Length: 270
Image (cartoon, rainbow, N blue to C red; front, side):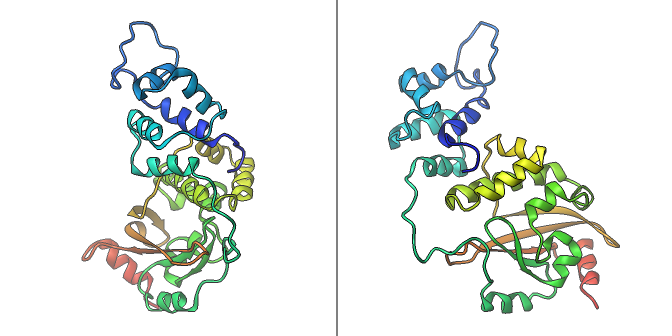
């Protein structure tokens, strides 16, 4: 993955620094000068030697056993997404496949037909790097970034309109980068150039990427400021489309009977 040859060590260190030593059961009457757990404290709690854990974090050993990974995940209090990410960092990359499709690519005709049936909902399809490949007209009305030719991550960090469109910009920025990291590790090497360019162009993106947070959000809610409609609160669901392309379908909707639903209906009325 871009700009870090020691992904395992960097991730372990970032999680270690987030663990509260006292709540983890560490008794320390001295004035602590480090965030979270010290290396030797984590090693002790996980039942491994400090020297071995140091080798892991420094990238001098990249093949811990499943038992050690489970112990580290327990002490670091990783959630399910973080555990999967930790395991994926240790697994060898899959053998190249001649059927592997590059990121992006054309959206299948059947998916486009499905989009046409959702004229009253903001729906769109993205590539692994979050390029918008296809969308309904209503999606573009709600958010300019949901239009073909845009990239969701680039819009968030590089487009001056993002702060207006997203009243909760910081939350969306954090989640978008953490989600991109999860995608990047599952599609080894494909997004390195994209990530490197964003790190170069955006300091906020670089800081969030280097925090090593990983997040998987398949559903949720967003607030969006829409011209002529005010701030809409919309729920969404995502659907991973089968196939090597890695396309994902996003569908946004308002709660039945809400003012948001009425505003969305008016936007979609010619």
